[in-house]
Image (cartoon, rainbow, N blue to C red; front, side, top):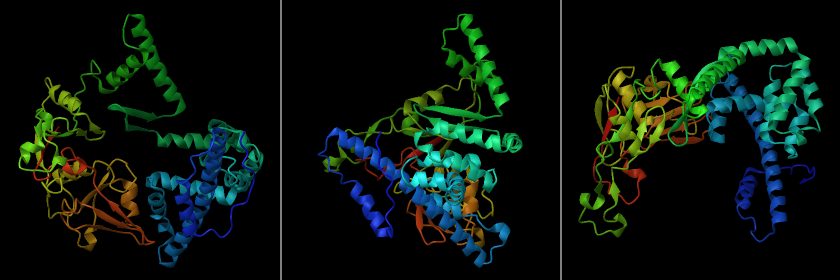
Length: 463
């Protein structure tokens, strides 16, 4: 096994020197043999672990400093904390929900698990395994965490992800069996169902349930699949289980007869399978980069609200598979220059139903960079308290966490002037700025290559 030694981290490393290290990693010499490549892979893994330890230390110091600044600014004790993890999430390029968990785990790791933290600094374990120890001991007392930390010292290097989780849980249960049981019961409050996109136009419908309920549900689906297969059903076992789940939840006779409302956004070219060429739109263009005969429209992907982009052919199939269902078509027009939806305004404080729907269709997911959570709030980019208007251009879709974070001390958000694709500038209390932009809609010419921009696209929303 590769052994990188137990060297100490260099002292006094500046931010500029750290940036230089990042740049130099791309310049590793290619002229080495495979044995040295394996050594490099091991060293790079150790570097990732050491960097994770340094990041956890910096995060904990940042969290402490920001809390002190909020208190000094007059924020009441009950209101201290919001917006801090969101800043860490932006810096780490991840969602505020994940960042909130990370900040908590990092504090426990740095301040109360010295042996685990030292193993991470030395590159003897991964960031995730170190964070597993922190996660599975957060409910214990400081002294109990110290016992587990000492028990795992020297062993982490030889344990995998699952082994670290199981061993930490086992030790925690021995220290406080009553607390472990109470924690398990409290976790039932977090039961929920979530939907996430999967490859190849599939989705993952996930239910977080108490163990007994989850096992019972799976057993019922298994029995249904075994019975169907025994009766000669030619579908695979997993297919029968999936179809049975849909049928029992929706109450329909077959899984393919789903009749719930969906929102499908596509161009008119996609819906009617109409292909034109850019030369037809601009036949006088002498620029060969436009490429005569380049197909435009018919194969433009559609957008299924709540899922994401889907192929044009599948969108047409969904639009055609209405049978007795009634399908309503709303025509929305994109700006011929920016490629984004045309503006809509209202003088009300709250976004009305149609304006809210238009904002959700435009933004698709939470607008905060790297968040990607479902939209829960339709928010004023410039707050209404600061004369922000209830308009399409000043509206943005956010998840709950991001909407609350932007109201924390020191945060500002400001929409850019019209005509710049509805960008929103986010400024954090430290002065860092991030630009939020909506994703491309079907027919947005700014996401296509070699296409003339001087035409408007019609979007159709099927519900």
